[in-house]
Amino acid sequence: MLLAVVILMFASTRSFAADNTLTDQEKKDGWLLLFDGQTTKGWMSPKEKTLPDKHVQEGSLNPHPCDYMLTSEKAWENYKLSLNFKISPKCNSGIFVRTFPLMPRPGKDVGFNGIEIAIDDTRTVGFHDTGAIYDLVKPTKNAMKPAGEWNHIVVTSDRNLLVVEVNGETVSRMNFDEWPEPNKRADGTVHKFDVAYKTHPRKGHIGLQDHGSDCWYKNIKLLPLK
Image (cartoon, rainbow, N blue to C red; front, side, top):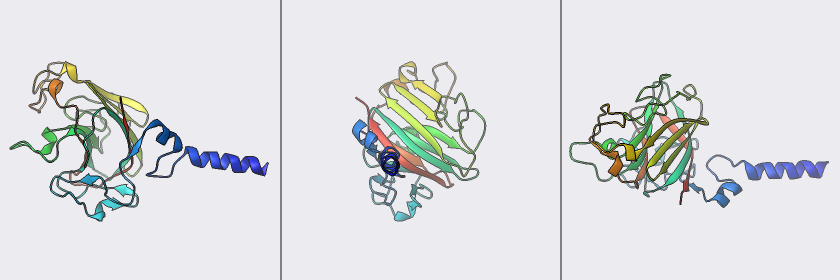
């Protein structure tokens, strides 16, 4: 009996990793850990390639305050991004994909270079609410938990597709092939970005936005897709 309990405990520890680590199965499947929970290694801001340790807080990465966003040092193409996030009250933040933080366009902030998955302390389902592809696609549901609780989000950026899942529910989807014109959504309505997403680069950095309030991120993992 005791042996069985020990075996079960060992199996459990191998299946469920501690924060900011990979399980054996995740390693086998090819997942990569983008944040070690202790340092800012692998992350930068538009003006700082070496980030101060103040952004690491109790095993999580907080982009506030920084110069608009923290970004991955490496650019990625075709992947599944999985992470946990927790917001402060009235928080406004976001996760950026396919962004180019070190090459801002004249007169535009770096938000115009990438694509934002909105994170906001609201309960509605508009173009700027949690799970929205910011200003482009509304979420079908606001699946976020209240401020102060941890959420899980998965963003799949795969060739012409972008899919967002919040707490296990698919809430938004975008097919870039259906967006050939700047400032125009697939249904013909107007958005604010002068970008033709059909030809938008598929490769870019991952960003965690600082929009003036605390938002914490942990268990930041990436699975490259073939």
